[in-house]
Length: 213
Length: 318
Image (cartoon, rainbow over all chains, first blue to last red; front, side, top):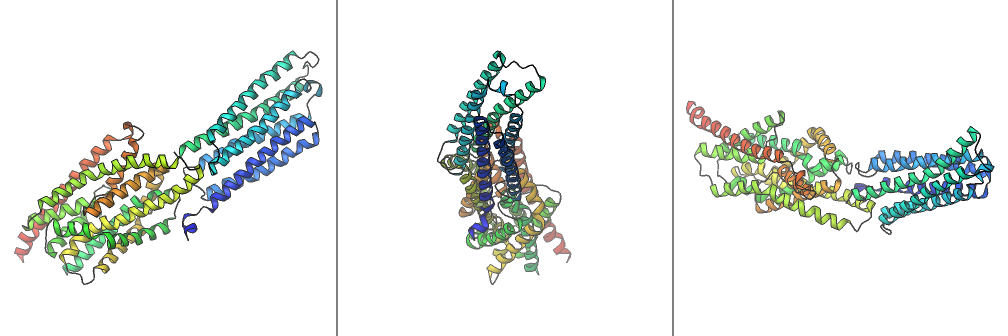
């Protein structure tokens, strides 16, 4: 009777879907990390598959929210959170796509740095998952998670500078072809942008938590 | 005949309370999507009946017995003036307080009839009208601070879940007060001047009329209020509504008829004060004071003239 009066079923479903969505993002970043590390082109297709899965989840989340889950005050914020993360899948897809066409001669100069960036992206996803679960059960401090994500993002910014520097100073892999240059530039841009999106999402969660207090 | 006529005026005013004041209780909860309109209205109706039955006696006694003792025909005239003023104000969308109109009309009719007015009782009521928004603001300020501290230990989605329950709780408290204070003010004068064999049927009719008013006419008002309030954060909304509910309950217990709307305005100002003085709208407070003065004096004057005309000219002509 009380459950019928106060509801709560829809909210539970939305929270489960968001958990799954974050798990999918984590798997996708892990997939990219494996791709760059093992250099197996076939594994790049897992990112597209995961992106499709995430798209289905995103639609479910937004539909459930507009069916009436949560106070109206929170609904746009939760939808925005999911839409911010959607950009991360876009960047992951670009990374996977561009990776297939990279000139390995040029790429070899920055390979190790790219692996480091991809690894940090995976860590950031895990921290984001923990940050979100702290909104459900206050086991961890969301502020700490937010700070940890910011530190990771700073590391990636520094790595980006190093990648640029390595490419500029590389004599054996000088870029002379426009398409090769565009290809590597887009790959790097997408790879380092994933962390920006995760940082934005983490900031959003932090603000969301403050909004009810 | 007077008995039936006075009953009709009571039902009309109760209908007005249902159509207008139900948004005080249900606006936030329906706007926030915590409860659906039909379910909320039924809950409102039941709690109004519970309010007047269990807690309405003190206010009814103050309004019906302590201010002025009048015979049924005079009460009938005063209640007719009140009903006309309330219907007109609803129609013209003027924010007249039901309490001030009814008490003003009773005083006006009492003076014209030559009855002894209990000035001490009126002074106490005026003081209650002045202090209730202030006390409500005071409760609102501290209650908001208290809630803020209490909720820091909970996870975000737990707070959201709790707030949904709290919003229903505060809506129920205001609904209960609507019966115990607002409806009791309307029912009081008629209940004490005419001897009803079973007063519960009178409560039942009054509550049903309030429910009907809420069911038929309140939809749009609730939608407007609800959408306006949900832009406010739910914790502030709940704190303001619950504090106002506590304040009205306190005054009901003391036997004073006070306006829930003004208490809610006071509580909103109180919760706003926690974020700084600039959040309080001084122009709105001035408007409320002017409105108090105007509705009270206007109802005294109109009721006085109508009763005077009735007893000095119409009855003489007959």
